[in-house]
Image 1 (cartoon, rainbow, N blue to C red):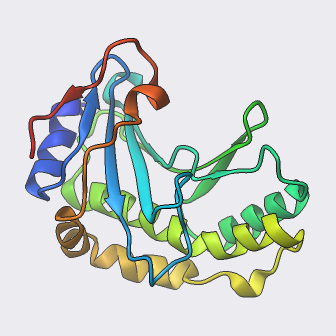
Image 2 (image 1 turned 90 degrees about the vertical axis):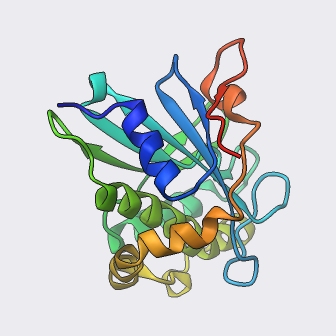
Length: 204
């Protein structure tokens, strides 16, 4: 059996996370406030927040989690160095990849999992979320440095393969700790399209 939106929301409910749903796009948005002392990452408003969007594709046989507009290099004069930094980071970490949209400068980290006829497990889902959160926090140093200086400095890469695996082992507990800080995400309609506001899960 393929994975459904309701199965994903059930996993989020079990972790006591708040989220918003876009049924038409088969997508769920989750907002996290991260520890500002542990990373220099900031969103487009300058806040230590991360937006993750879970998308169910191919009739539930494929799942992806992305961080829309995690970084934007539309006006950056050092794009080659940024792209080199992305490759350097991606080569050192499992699962993570980066997409770039030349139309608006968006850099979007993401992880993907082919499910085929299987339902995703709680451990698998929490690992995907944990890897995404950790990658955004860890990759920001090398990416931001490249954006400012035009230099891709691999020494700025923190975490990496071993750290990502260690973080994944404690995903469930860490997500429960983050649950108190997780909030609804007003940007869902803008990110996923559609004229109507996304349906709220009712979780408060």
